[in-house]
Image 1 (cartoon, helix red, strand yellow):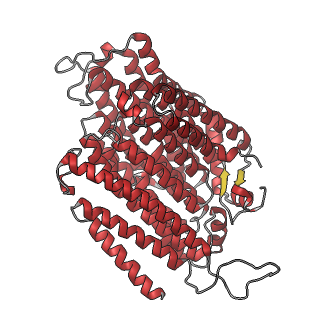
Image 2 (cartoon, rainbow over the protein chains, first blue to last red):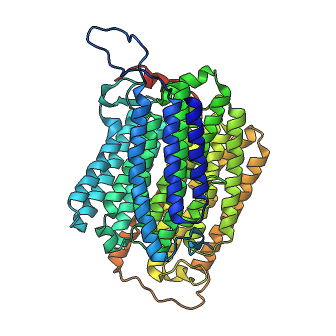
Image 3 (tube, rainbow over the protein chains, first blue to last red):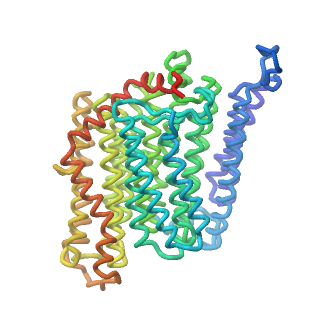
Length: 115
Length: 499
């Protein structure tokens, strides 16, 4: 399972970085999205893949019968997903506005500020 | 334990909420922003009094004991950063009241600025790596909107570059967090320090450390990851540029200092060597890029990069004296750099341009403003007895003691080139007569003009003050650096209960 996920993460990172280096604004934002998915899966995999139950002790129990799953990576990923959702939404609006003002979605044309 | 460490986060949040509620009244928003900044400054002073003897103010949020909950920990470095943030907040919100155009204020400049301050302060007080990531996102989101607010073409172009590269850096940061958690099983900085010091998986630690160096390096504007900075910083109104230059890159630098003194201090030969090389190249490339520019904002913006090099140089040398220099430099640069941007804004206010080749003769027209500029500019270049001189002196002595001749040579050379850039601005804008006389566009009556200059006068007095009272400030920076070099105190304060 780890090997499979590692390959998936690698593909996500590779695809994300490739798209970010294209000249198109839309591909840039898709690339950023893939990159953040890759990072989320990386946390998930690095946090340890285990088929355990929820880490809740029943009343009176002092220890877990079987090793439970670690809930923290899931909490971290959830937070990261929410953040990347908001940021992606903002970036989409920004890029749309840029497209309207500049009149092109070619990143190479965004050079009015360069000297 | 008191709420004190959480106040720097809660106060700006409350201010921002109030501003949003009163979004129809710009006058009230101004008052709230000023009051919030003032209270923030007072809180920072309280924290400073509390931590001055070396105690570390720790708060376990929701009484979840470390390492299970989120811990806020304020040591002397955090404290000095909070104090500077408070000072800059007061100065910049005061300046914004006079300088910023009405539509931008109506569209939420003040609440966004306060949210940005919340993010910055959160990053300074947190003792948890994932929490640091969250604060980074808070301040980034606020900065995205501040940068694009107004929607002029250069702003939007700058924002695209700024957003893309900062999101890339966040993704790297997040990936680093994931790997570190998988390895150490914790994200509490103090516990991470303990786990990493046990040193079982040296190679993996070094790899993760380099990921963090990349992530924070992008945010701090280190070589070769700084190209977003000169592309985006000069585009928004000058208040926003001043705010960003004072705070944002410095949060990146602060995170570098925190992580590379507390957690990744096991392999200084490689890691801090790498940082030192980066520092040298950062200084050099920043100052050379500035030499080619003829627009005030752009010169100052690329100079941010070269100054970051000096700050990081102290971390790369990694001795107590070097870190003292780094902290002193941070104190100096946050004030001086912001002030230079504010003065540039005042010049633009009078003449309507930032182009060196169009400006001229301002010394004759506005001698007061010229003096404010020249003091800050000389301080940036490191002319005694101003604040920059002592900051550079400490770093260079630290370098000489380490026998790092190359970096000392680079630092001295870059200092000279900084002087060149600053005298270039001085001679073009203030000293030589203008090629064609430009009309005075400033409609302010003289009473209001003095009020407008007040933040700049304050910052200039602070620059001189830091130079005059360099002794006590140096002692404070030395104590803060001592805390950083002996992280056991921080670890004990966080993990040893005290909630």
